[in-house]
Amino acid sequence: MMDLSDLNAFVAVARAGGFRDGARASGGSASGLREAGRRLEVQLGVRLFNRTTRSVVPTEAGLSLLERLGPALSEVEAALDVVNGFRDRPAGSLRLNVPVSAARLILPDIVPGFLAAYPGIRLEVIADENFVDVLAAGCDAGIRYDERLEQDMIAVPIGPRVQRFATAASPAYLDRHGRPQHPSDLLGHSCVRGRFASGAMLPWEFERDGEVVRVDPTGPLIVRIGGATDLAVDAAIAGTGIIGLFEGWLRPYFDSGALEPVLEPWWQSFPGPFLYYPGRRLVPAPLRAFIDYIKGGKA
Image 1: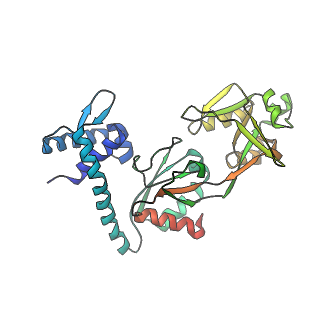
Image 2: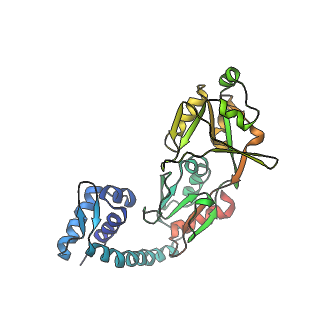
């Protein structure tokens, strides 16, 4: 008899392409997954992975097993989850893959109340700026903006339905260098920029009375969007230059006076984010509870 946990470990490693990434996706340990893989190979009498110092790649036998085993394990999970329907309150784990901006601006207004309403659910939030396959990453759902959603996903609005991209600088910086009156003026200023993990650095876009202006300013500091965003904010407060970021992220610093809005009449609005999840599988009870919670006007 095969141990179900060993089979799950095999799927996690095969999908992630490594023991460490598989451990991050499954919530286990790399050593535990490695040992589970060895046990499974001994029981089956066939090599399932080709291992090198840099990668773990399924063999032909491993790929064949993964192709059949993945859907089967999903059915097992779905069958076990049916039991949740007999509880007064759903229980289990819910894993969400979200951008750092959502973890900072959207979830704080949702998570405490949700967990209080469903004490049997354990929520794990993975903040990641990479556009990942939520299933391959071992997550139940994700949060993204609509232009980044895959076509086979179901999307549910979450958080504010309208957000704005804001620009700001410290009053001291603006006193020294002047206050821009038009987005093109930013080309003569020091700006704090952000770069995505993919390497892309998007231009700043502004709009007023139907006129759209895109500028690509330069400056002394570029940070990785997500993990180093707070550094960019701190640098702007210290007078390094003009920063562009979600209005909600900068609002506390406007209120305190640490930052001053720049070009506010030109700030561009964009639709708020969506919770998305695969439409081709049964929705686990913890995720269904989360969807019902945000749909019920709780967030």
